[in-house]
Image 1 (cartoon, rainbow, N blue to C red):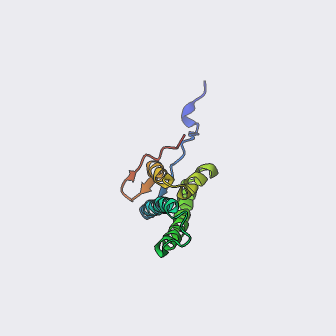
Image 2 (cartoon, rainbow, N blue to C red):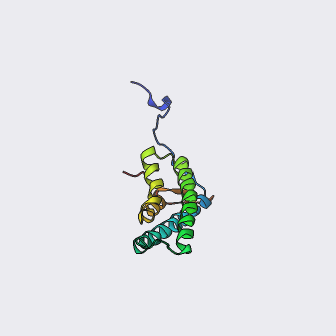
Image 3 (cartoon, helix red, strand yellow):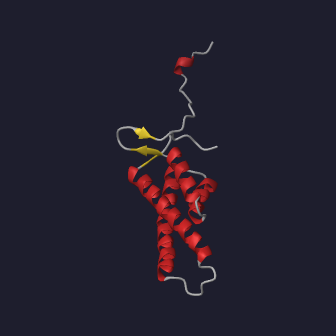
Length: 130
C-alpha cells in the first residue's frame, strides 16, 4: 500500500482577486453618472430631432457624457484587469456605458461579482459569472 501522508496536496483552488475599495467606488459613481447622462441625452435627442439649433446645454451634456465615459472606460478596464475577467466579459462591461440604461445593469453585476479588500474583511460574493 502507498502512504498518502507524504504526497503533497495538488489542490486546484484558485484565490479570488480583490480590488481596492476606491476603485469599486469610482466605478460605481462613473457608471451612474454615465448612465444618467446617456438616458437624459437620448430622451432629449428625440425631442430635439427636428430642431436645427438645439440649446447649448444639450451639447455640453453630450460632452460631459463623453468625459464621464472615458473615466468609466478606464475604471472598467482596471476592474476587469484586476479581477482577471475574460475579454468577452470585460468588453460587455465596458460597452454597457454606451447603451442607455445598460450601465445600471452592469454596475449591479460588477458589485455582486467583485470582492473588495478593505483590510479587515471581504465584501461581495466573488463568485464567477456563468
